Amino acid sequence: MNILITGCAGFIGFNLCSSLLKNKNNKIIGIDNINNYYSTKLKKDRLKILQKSKNFKFYKKDLKNYNSIFKIFKSNKIKIIYHLAAQAGVRYSIDNPKKYSDSNMVGFFNLLEISRIKNVKKIIYASSSSVYGESKIFPLNEKQRILPKNFYGLTKKINEQMAEIYSNYYKMKFIGLRFFTVYGEWGRPDMSIFKIIDASFRKKIFYLNNFGNHDRDFTYIGDVVNIIKKLKFSSKSNHKIYNIASNKPINLKKLIILISTLIPLPKIKSREMQKADVKKTHGDNKEVVNLTNYKKFCDIKSGLSRTINWYKSYYIKNN
Image (cartoon, rainbow, N blue to C red; front, side, top):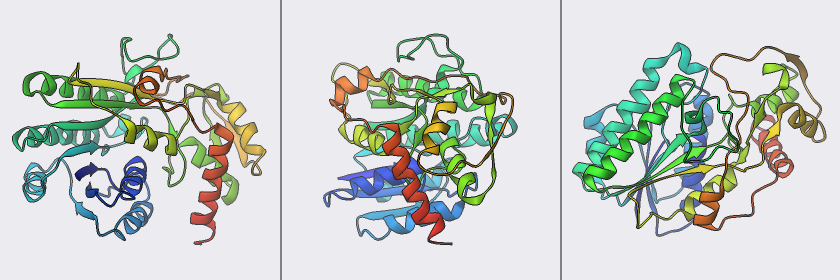
C-alpha cells in the first residue's frame, strides 16, 4: 500500500515510518522540509535510517508550495495520508506567527485540496492538546469546548475545522489526533524531558518553569505509534477526533525526582510561568482506547529509562 507521511523526518513521523516499513507490503512516500526549528542533523540522521529501506521514497519539499506537492501526488498513487508535518512549539509561535500560518494552515489546506482533486479519501492528521487552552475541566475530553491560548493551538483548531468542512462537502474520511506531550527515543530537543536529560549529561542549567507547578500528560512514543497503527475510520462519521494521551499526568517536580533515580540531576533554576504556557494537561483517552483496544501503556519510569538509553547511544557515543 502506498502511504504518504508528511513530517517524515520529525519525531512522530520518523517513528511511524520506521514501524510501518517493517511490513514489506507498505511503500512510504515521505515529505519533509527539514526546517531548522531544532537540529537539522537529528532530522537528517532519522532520514538516513529510513532511506536504508527500498520501500521509502523521500521528497524534500515544503507543503506551502502547492505545485511541488501536486507533482508528488501525480507521480505516486497514494491510498492514505498521515499528516504529521507542522511548525511545532508553543512559545516559538509568539514571535514567529507567520511560520505557523504558512506551515500549519496554508500547508494543510494545500494537502486537503490536492487530496480532493486526486481522490485521496483517507487522512489521519496531527492536532494537539494545545487546542484546549487553559481549561479547568479535567481530564480533557474530545467533546468539551476548545479555546486555544496561543497561536500554535489556534492553527491546530483551524486544522480541525478545515478537516470538518472537507469531510462534509467532499465525503473525505479524517481522523484528528490531539497529541499530549509525546516523549521517547529520537525525541525533540525542545521538550522538557529531553532538556533535563541533556542538561544532566552536559552539565548545563535546566530552567524549571512555573517553579515546577506544572502537570503534564507525558505519552510515550511507542504507545503513540502503536495506537496510530490500530486506528480505524468510522462508518458513522467522516471526521473523528481522538486524544492521544496516557491519562496519567505527572507534576514536573515529581518527574524530576523520578529522573533523579536514573541519572544525576543537573543544576536547576526555577522561574515564573512562561508566555503562552498552560498549568496542566491531562487527556481522557477512553475514546481511543475503546476504538483500538490498546491498553498496555508504557509507565513513565520505563519510558524515561528507554529515552535516557537512547540519548546516551546517540549523543554520548557519537560525540
